[in-house]
Length: 401
Image 1 (tube, rainbow, N blue to C red):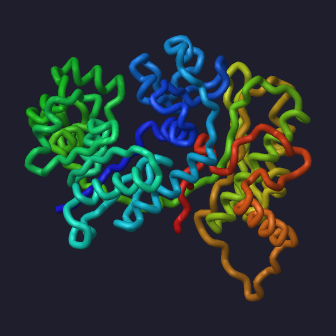
Image 2 (image 1 turned 90 degrees about the vertical axis):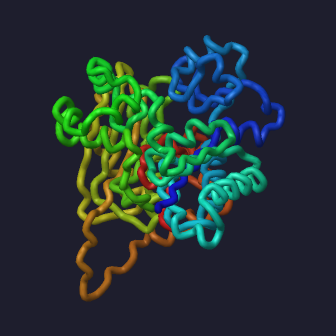
Image 3 (image 1 turned 45 degrees about the vertical axis):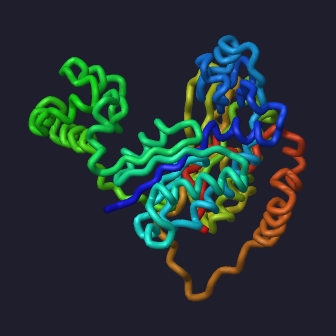
């Protein structure tokens, strides 16, 4: 019998802010950017009764909760806390599947013999996070990932819930069909028209009936989930396809010279992440969002795979020069697609480029004093997130240890 945990930090970014600034504790806190253009990055539980939630436009959030305290995000602090949380996870199992900086699935099946029942392991993890990091966390315990995820959601804030195998169908029965993975607004509406309002309604139907109405694959998927059947394994450290960084500007920017420092900084951040994970890539992609919200991407392929920020920047700059057309820009992003196949080794290994020693030195300085301790002259003082900004489009949030 599998033992799966889903551990989720409660209002993670807001909780970190309240921990680090005692004057914010117990107060309605919104972590977000520009009051008119930004979005809510996190909302403390004290502000949620006013309808404020993550990803909501800041303008709407401030209108709904004018008394709330708005705090500018500190992504490096959240990344550091995340590393500490995952280090605690690793005390109990190597089978950890990160979903983001603040939540993960843990397969503790093989750990039960060492640490006790799965619910006890979840309790120990939450206690250690609270004691060592002074942060709240919730957990769900089940034999399937899908059920564990729902259980942790219902246990919030700062609680845990175990769903035993024999309780699974009853536990799911009263929940809305929107809780089923893969059920979006359109599918939910179609299910309601078919008389399926709760997960219990789905479980009561024959699998063939569901397949006839929603297709063989979807019908089977819905029937299995409604019975708590989810055979997917916890997959640690999924292979990344690309590493990237992007920024939404507080105000629209116009002109190549104004945009260059931002693209340069993004290229350097991507390069540091590549080197940190011992990865390289050949395909450089530039992402641009104009003031009218039009989004375009442009890419180019290098002759050799690289992890050098200057090489990535020069490639991204060429793409920018061809694509920007003098229009006002809302967002820029740089990413590098990773090589899927390792290049064939030559008989005589090529000498490391001269830039590698410089990069190593800069990486050591950044690791000790922060990513902004040393940088290029053209981006010095620029408002840019640190390397661990989770807004960046990078699947490699947690490199293998």
